[in-house]
Every structure is written in C-alpha cells, then in structure tokens.
Amino acid sequence: ALGVIHRAWPMVPERFKDFISTPKSNNYRSLHTTVVGPSGLRIEMQIRTEAMDRVAEDGVAAHWAYKNKSYGFDKEAMEKDGGRDPLQNLRHLVQVIEHGEGGEDWVEHAKLEMYLDQVFVFTPKGALITLPRGGMPLDFAYAVHTGVGDSAVGVKVNGELKPMRTQLQNGDVVEIIRGAKREIPVDWRSLTVTGRARSAIRRHIRTSERGEFQKLGRATLEQTLSRAGKALEEVTLKPALETLAVETDEDLFEAIGRGRLSAAKVGETLFPALKGRLKAGPDRKRIADDQARMFVRGGGLTPGVSIHFGHCCTPVPGDRIVGIMEPEVGLTVHTIDCQKLADFADDDSVWQDLQWTPQAEQGAVAAARVRATIKNAPGVLGQVATLIGEAGGNILNLVMSHRQQDFFDVDIDMEVEDAKHATMIMAALRANPSVDTVERARG
Image 1 (cartoon, rainbow, N blue to C red):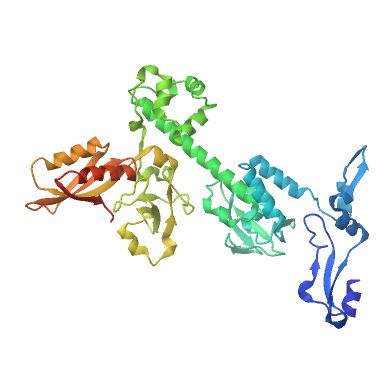
Image 2: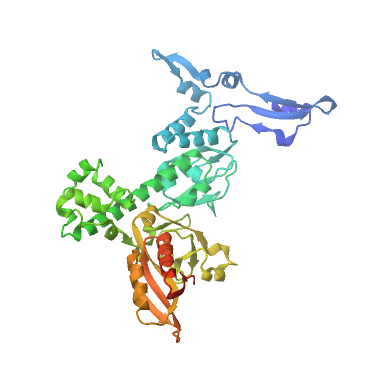
C-alpha cells in the first residue's frame, strides 16, 4: 500500500514516520506519510492493520478480554499482535513512588515522560529501550536497571567511547561501562532527563551521605564520652533512644553527625551524673584536610582526589568558597575573594563550585587568620589575647612582623565557629584603642 501511494504522488521525505518497527510507548503502531496531492496540497496518510487500528482507537482496552474466569489485560494477545507491554511506563512511575522523596519526584517524572518525544535505542543484546528525546546514557542505564545506573562509569555508543552528556539518537546501540560501587557526583543529575534516573541518583546520594554522617556522629559521640572516661563500646544506647525518641543506633549517630542532636546531650542522657561536664563547645570537630569531605560538598568532588584548605585565606564556615584543581596537589578550597584566585582567572576548567555541609556550619570549628596592626606598648598584646578569649576564640598561632617604634603587625591564627564569629571577634578588637586595623587574611 505504501508503495502504491508513493508511486501515485510525490512524498515529503521528512514527514515519513515508521511506528511499526519502533512503536510508541502506548503500543501505537502505524505508518505515517505525507504526499503532495492535487494543487500542491499536502495530505497525511496513515497505514495500519485492523488490529493496529483497534489499539489506535481503544488504547490499552484493545487487549483487554475475559480469560481464565477474569477480565483484564491479555498480554498474550498483545504479544501475538507484535505490541509491547503498555504498563511498563506505569511500572516506572511505581518505582519512583516507592523510592522517591515524595510527590515532587512523581510529578517531575510524569511530566518528563508524558510531554517529551521519544527515541529508541538498543542494548548490545538487541533489547529495545525507549527514552524521551534528549535522553543520555545515564537515562539509558537506569532504564535497564537501577544497579546498572548506580555503577555506571562510562559509555560506548555504537562501539565508540562517548561522554556521559551525549544525547542518544534513534537506533544507537548503547553499552554501559560499569565499575565498582562508588560515590555519585551530585552534578550527574544534570546528565539525565528522565524522572526515574534523577530520582535514583538522589536516592543514591542520600544513602551515601547517610553513611558518612553516621560515621561522623559515632566518632563525635565516642570523643565526647572519652573525655568523661567512658567508652561507647561499653554503653547501651537504649536509654538515649527512648528519651530522645530515636528508633535505632544508626539514626542516633546520623542525627549527631548532621548536627540535629548534640553529642553532649546524648552523653548526659546516658550518664546524668555528667550533666554540665559535657559542653557543646568541645563537641565541635576541627575542620582539617584529613576529613575535608565531611565539611565541604560540591558537584565536582571526585572520589580519591585530596582536598586541602587554603592557608592563604583560611576559609571558615559562612565564607563563600570555591575549589581550584591543581596537578599533583588536588583540590584547594579558597574563599571567593582570595587574592590567589587571580592566578587562575583565565582557566575555567580548574574551578569547582563548593558549599559547606550542615556539619561544618553547625558542629565544627575552623582556623581563621586575621592580620592586625597594634600599638607597640607593654600589655597591648595581652589585651588582644584577652579580647579574643572573651569572644570565644582560641589562639592557635601568633606571628609578629614589621615591628616599628610605634606599631607592629601581627598574624593571628584562631579557632572560630564560623565567619560571623570571626567578624564579631574583629569588631571587639577594633573597639580597643590600641588596635589600629584588623582584617581577615585574603592571600
């Protein structure tokens, strides 16, 4: 029939569509062609069998029948007619409901799946996978299986290695390269268009973060109890779980790691006699290079890359931060106004957007460096140290330079909770008449 039509009238090539070899997700199958008829009028023609027409007109109901004493979807009849399971998309929605964060995930998935055109790609074994137009390898991987998506590290398209941001085209043969279980970068969500893939990535990230916070919370509680001569291994946490309305030990550790519960409060719940001896201040963990991943996060953080905090600008929670990737060094965290960043202004590829984690903002202390010019007089340095201590700071190091008859400069490294705390200390120092200037070190 198609040949007869094309011999009778000239066809419009870009308007020919074959939905028989690649049916739509709702099992719609047909040949569409547009020809140029009399007087140059374009006419679209659709060619299909009677069985295909029943599906086109009645949808899923075309394969519903009374069978085995029940009325329902007749999968055998559907397969006999060459169709595909129309309930597959609904199963994807069910998976999003089961594993997603809530209604927003479901709505996002439904919109993406319903309002985008489709492309048809194949696994290396020939299985057909339907994706929204613009779908990328991670969408394909999660469409095959969640485990494939979670372990994807690369992709081959038609036998060639391709970037993960490659948009798949009709007929592509896609092979996912899998690796060991790993940390999924947050920015991988930008490499997907399907709600199913995005939901799975969010779930994987939440699970990974939960494990990290549990380890951090456990270590914090152990450190707190050790100051009172107690060992966590010798303690049952059941009284704290009941009093604080927490279900499991892991939930308790996670709450401490995220800063929702104070380790001191947990310790005092377990040992009421220690009340007042376990203050929140010592619970704060020192931000250092060896545990940097506990305190900063960002889409560009690659597992295995070492992270360092810049000594030039001494970033603390509350500062806007960026990361600079340097060969043989790793990722160095700088404040956004660090003078060193000017050296990398012409190379966008080394910059990484970073943020502080909740643990850094709520349960940690960091070293901030301030530079002050003070009077060269007896007792002034002692006044400065006293002001810092009274404001809650802890001096770690002090270096004097440019000493003159009237004034000298001093670099002070001090422990602070965040940028606001550092600003408060500097304000207290400026109020002293013996202090001429004081500011944060910026490179």
